[in-house]
Picture 1 (tube, rainbow, N blue to C red):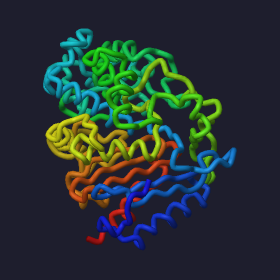
Picture 2: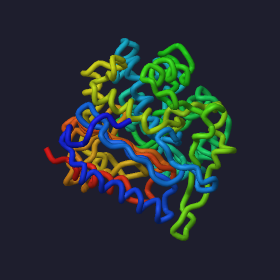
Picture 3: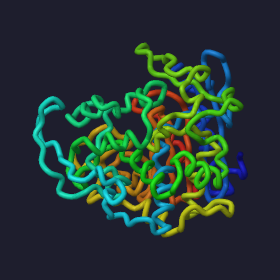
Length: 410
């Protein structure tokens, strides 16, 4: 996987080697099962290392081809799928989605109360494609219940309380979208940033505009052309031996098994291929995606998007940072100093965000503590994989940023 020495692209081998010790300390502490870190800069992959185990129970090591649940790192790929259809002229970003989802008309917005009794007002306008891509649609998630709409999602079985990584009720993407459209919103469209099922609705829109099931579109138009051979909505039988276990903290400073790879629901195709969090992938596969984005929509002669589309996706589309767009809820990023584009968080001010980075860097993470970021200023991408729920357990993302950015010496 490594194609050049760090010095060839302005990185220090000595400084980058600090990542080795950092990885070993984390897995040696018993807090993380295994880690994989890949660093790519100026067209070359200059660092790739694994440490620890993909399964503590079996002793199987973490390897370069270990398959992991990437959860919300699915969202950028789903967003790319939709933007490919945007480039084909299927819709404009500010078109209302009710043009193809008529059941979503005449929505209402909860202004007070709880799921049993609430007051609502009419939505000021229909949800647009841009609202979905930027998480300003007014939709909710449900797995963190702190709003009446979250509880309504729970009541209707679209709450994303994960059982082995999938919705607890075997409904289709179409059915999930229909159920969500019948429920009220938690904010007026375009007015607040709320992490939500928006990217699953995007998956449904990909089906409609793409003329095929969402999972087929992803395989034939996105992951297949990119050569992401191990990325999909389930782990095929022939690859099951490389599938990692997933863990949660045990409350004693260690971890315990959450999803056994030998019995996981990920071993079979899901009834609902989740564009918000359903994919599995590997370090090499996800770096292919990052390289495509850094390459202005193309990698190794394969083009998914035009350069200007990538530039548009990775600009901040909010009125300010996420912290200025309403009361903070669960997110895979800080709120202060970070905006949001069309499927990615976007760095606005590293000092305000209090993390290492560059203005214009785009990123996201997954619930099992995975993360990636692409920095066009430095022409650099980093992919980190592990398997520990939830992602807020440890500060490993921030720590790895310090180590990798600290290795830049040109």
